[in-house]
Amino acid sequence: MLKINDIEFKEKFTEVNIRQRMYKEKNIITLIITTEFYPALFGENVVSGAIEAKIDLEGIKSLDELQERTHEGEIGNVTISVNNDGVWEHESKDNFKIEIKKRKNRDLEFILKTDNCELDTIGVLVSLYTTSTSREKLLKEFDLDDFYDKPTIREIGNNKVYKYFVKE
Image 1: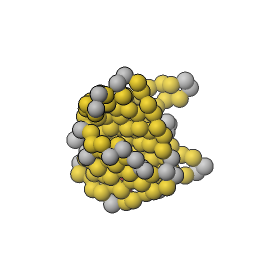
Image 2 (image 1 turned 135 degrees about the vertical axis):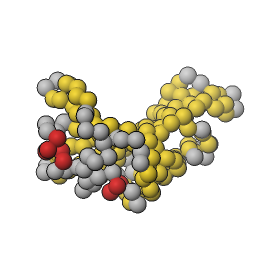
Image 3 (image 1 turned 180 degrees about the vertical axis):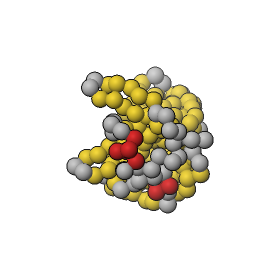
Image 4 (image 1 turned 90 degrees about the horizontal axis):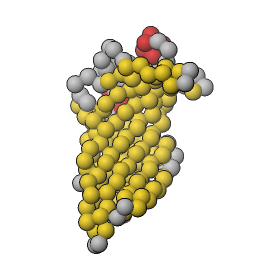
């Protein structure tokens, strides 16, 4: 269920990607949740769009550690992008709440709330990406048992980005 300004929309999809990085000797995991929703007619306007949430979490060392947790406050950013009859409107929220419920294989159940938006859904866990230079170094910070062993590797500038995909 997705509601924006008390109007319900039907979701196309919700996917969850994870970024891992070290910052001041701390392991930071960022959940990147992307939800797109189908066009709907409201009054005389066709409305569609997407929501992207980036949530920074410390101390998470596995996918299982995501579940049964609630985080709130200024823990990242939620961007609500609405196409209202061909005109894009973007609204950014820094203060929000996410209640992560259960994880089953690649499915992650959660409720995301801002002051004018509520997303109660199950997102599909897709990947983890990192710039850690070795698998061994990454394994010290995050359990990769739920991911395929072989990452895809892309070079961006002077860095290599390793992307591990969640197993079925």
